[in-house]
Length: 48
Image (tube, rainbow, N blue to C red):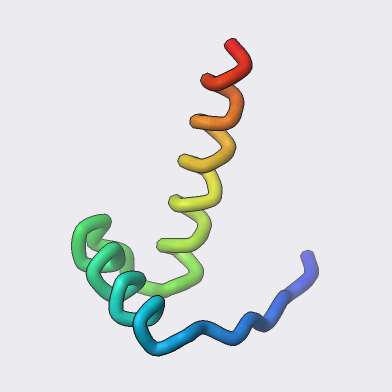
């Protein structure tokens, strides 16, 4: 498994913190996994 470091703007950090509260995730990694899975699902649904 590879690790990627990204730079996030301050406004984006605030939005991510809101999403983290909504999804009740413990870590930012957990939140990003959920968001990536949802994006993939919606991408697949677009082609169905």
